[in-house]
Length: 212
Ligand SMILES: C[S@@+](CC[C@H](N)C(=O)[O-])C[C@H]1O[C@@H](n2cnc3c(N)ncnc32)[C@H](O)[C@@H]1O
Image (tube, rainbow, N blue to C red; front, side, top):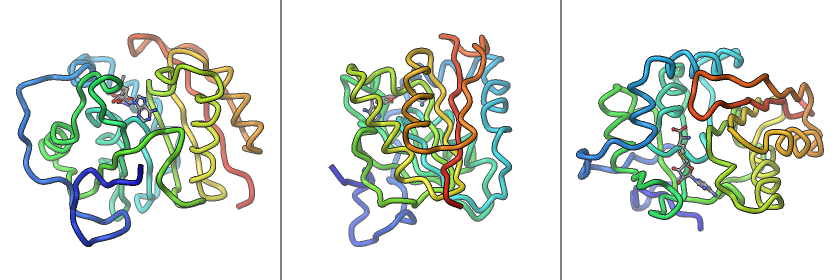
């Protein structure tokens, strides 16, 4: 479903206003708890340092949850924007809510650089070749079937501009993501060694969209 979670009315594109009002701040999500643990900033830096940021990128964070990665990306942007998309379903999202994500972004001073959308990784509500960087952390393993996970990788590659970078961090199925990314024609596809900075331990599959 193509729906911007902020229900911002008539505006279109990625520069809509972010949702107003944080109504539920009492709850700290799983990602929020990880944010409080000492290794997380190192893990985020390790992931994001692999991108040669200019600051003007349009970035998509698939399965953004409470915005841990989204906020870290937004801190690296100047004129760019970071779009977070999530199913926001009580069943899938561990209770993550866009209001809480926005409140997190506000408290980190980056709310003006992010937008939140509702949508499924397997059918991203964006056009082809829109984003400079597409990333995802600890999300795709939630998709039960191999075909669905591969479809999500194809979608991430589809919305990426030629020459753009994709980073998929996950605890499971990373060989599948690596294979699917290669099948999309991505170049420089790598799968990292296991990192224990996050729990569960993760690998990062990365690649560059061909055709720049
Ligand atoms: C463990 S949380 C990770 C959140 C965030 N990426 C982080 O690292 O803190 C997993 C998130 O993926 C979202 N998610 C699960 N399946 C999804 C799907 N098919 N499409 C989009 N988001 C999904 C959930 O709603 C949840 O917010």
